[in-house]
Length: 139
Image 1 (cartoon, rainbow, N blue to C red):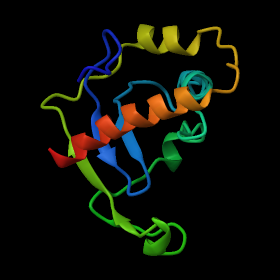
Image 2: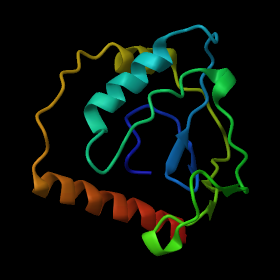
Image 3: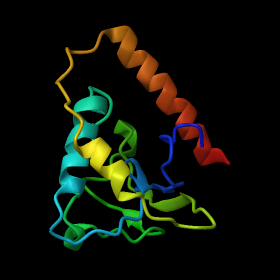
């Protein structure tokens, strides 16, 4: 998986029915704030007009998704491109290794600065990259 950061284990990749998930195993106490800080760092780096990092999923008691079920968030609007869709697992590695704590520390501790708004060309380039990732869905 070419998008994996150096040293990170292979994640479970899933389609929630409304977007993609990368699921990583972490061995941390529930009250550790590193996941919240990592999500914030990812949000600052990657969220744009086409993508939104969900920064609210740091609380393990609230993270639940039963893949293989229909996602019925909002109205079923196929004509508007928003039909109810099935959630599913796209890739499950043979071994689900935990992310080393030092990699979480490195990500959570990055001094992130909010970037300037993206140009139209940068948005289209990001959409093209996501389209390539979506082709993963067909394999």
